[in-house]
Amino acid sequence: MNEIVTILGIIAAYTLLVLFIGLYSYRYSKPTMEDYHMASREFSFLVLFCAIFGTNISAVALIGGPGKAYHVGWIVWAYFVTSWGWLSPLLFYTVGHKAWPIAKKFGLMTISDLLYKRWDSRFLSYLASAFLIFYTLPYVMTGVIGGGRTFQALTHGFIPYWVGALIVTFVVCLYVAFGGMRGTAWTNTLQTFVFLIGGIVMFFLVAEALGGFSKATQLIAEKYPHLLSREKFPMRLFFSYGIIVSLAVPMFPQVYIRLLTGRHPRELKKTILIYPLAAMIIWFIVAYIGMWGHLAFPGLAGAASDKILPMLIAKYTPVWATGLLGAAIFAALMSSLDAQLLTMGTMLIKDFFLGARKKAVPEKTDISFSRFLVIVLAFVAFGAALIKPKAIITIIEWSFGGYACMIIPVLACLYWKRANKYGAICSILASQFVLIAIPLGALPRQISFGMLPGVPALIVGTLVLLIVTYLTPAPEENLNKNFFSL
Amino acid sequence: MSLTTKQKEVIVYVLAAILMVIRVDWWWWGHKIYPLVFGWLSIPMIYQILVWLAGWLLVAYVVYKVWPRENETE
Image (cartoon, rainbow over all chains, first blue to last red; front, top):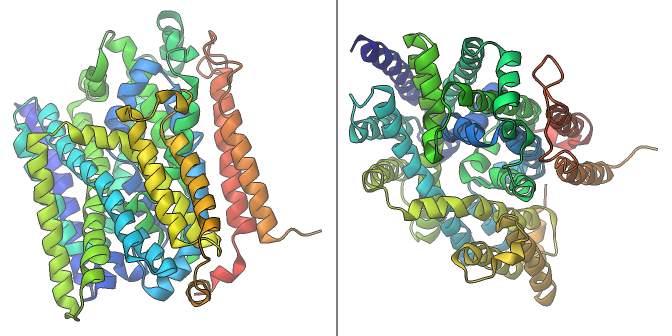
């Protein structure tokens, strides 16, 4: 019982600190939509980096990462870091350095905003938003589910699943509703430090307990050589996942929006420079902990390995470390959940409500409505987390490919003057159709050549964009002139 | 001869594409490997670290040499 009280005390102290920072940011808010949703685009490097990185790293890294490494070995860190770790920051440049000045000039926030400004097509804007919301909503739900499960696991069931889920929903909802973008970014700064430092501490504690890096790895080589040889990891999956995840991350709506919140391109430059290092640290840690976990807890099957990190911490480290682990998991979890929640609200109000509205309303009313939307979305996610519909897992499996395919119209929008709305619309429809049709069996799996369905979807989307663009009229000159006038 | 921003970008993206292909070290994949360096790191692990490092260098090149100066002004 004392153990649970200590763990809960650490987690409660951490949660209250996050809540305090989130609510404190409210004091700096201005009564404008630009401030609530974009924090007036005034972030400096450190906050911008943490806002983007913290949003990108979810609890999946600290729970699913070691769990996967338990089964397939060290290759898990290379799976992410030798592709996404540097290619996504490179694409932050590709997208960000072009989009930032345009978004600042025209007050754009979302991906759909950008597409609408370029091609003046409400249908295209709705289509892009609909797909992005379709893929993001399940993630919000999994964040809440993860919160409930983590509370339950760390307190050995003392806090039931639904109470844990409710606590996470309530805390995140509160500081997102009041703090808006500033609140989420400030809390992400703390959260990023907590999960990075917490991860490093856990890495050394576990390695020490297992006899050190060298001894643990030598034992793996003797007892479980497949974890070093990678024979259980399909090479084509390694190749295609690298492409898909790297292209998807800049198109995560919550990441894209944050690319635009720096006060100067200089801040984004520093962010992309440090990103690969932070990516390496977090994934290196989780992959080796997961692999070494085989020595302490052999024979875990399937998703049971997702608990390997808490199991190792509970077995080999003092109780405060379990509390630290809890705080690190919650940090990773909440830093994604808050950003997704806010961005969902931004997309709904900016892409749908404001776009369709005919008469002007005071900005304060829009901000209040934004807050209301965040609260509603949070409790929809909580409700879904109680029901746990199986469909959300299916949508999440599609989502990386879905996000990745969105980069085709976005790059055409930013770089190709001849590109038009017809090409962009058809590209989205064709790529998303291929992506969903392959796993559903409507198209033969063989066209993927053993890779993820996102790869053929990307190829089809690109070809359709090119063909349809050249078969249809070029965009109006004044639209291009206005958009590319910087 | 100094390269234009566009030329530098093309070089970066071509190198990125090459890196994405060669990160799959199919010549070692599935073979039995042993930790060599510090009794911990194996050759394929070090190879993957080098791929990551090369990717990071590409990012650094973009930051310091490619990112257009005109965007520096607000």
